[in-house]
Image (cartoon, rainbow, N blue to C red; front, side, top):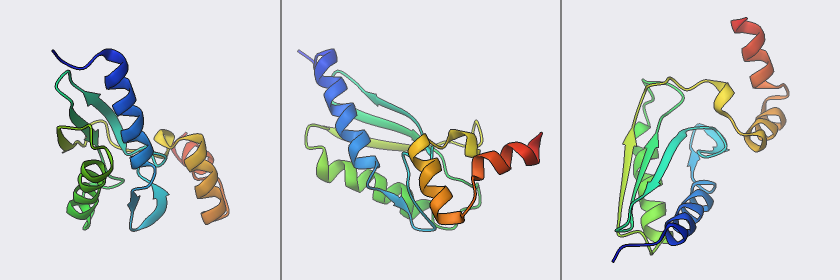
Amino acid sequence: MGLTILEREAIKNKVIEVLKNVYDPEIPVNVYDLGLIYGINVDEEGRVSIQMTLTAPGCPIAGMVIASTESAIREKVTEAKEVYVNLVWDPPWTPLRVTPEGREALKKLLGYDLVEEWIKATS
């Protein structure tokens, strides 16, 4: 018998907490709040699959970010039987994907609201 919906949801919540401690080395905001996580699925067998993007397709550290994301989940979410991190480029990442927490962190870091500036620049 597989995991219940509640057990799967609990694993997903643990995964989110772990993702909030994984950082893109070039941007000091975690991958979750930066809006790089497009989807998290936990199946009935406890396999975790994550759809993730990066801020730019030519990112030279893409492999490192994916590997550290996968490794952190494997280490800290012991209920996960298997972990798959899939890199996706569609839809492309934009600052609109940043969470409110990430937006505040970026404001402190940059001295301006990246989302607001992006909206102005693209309107």
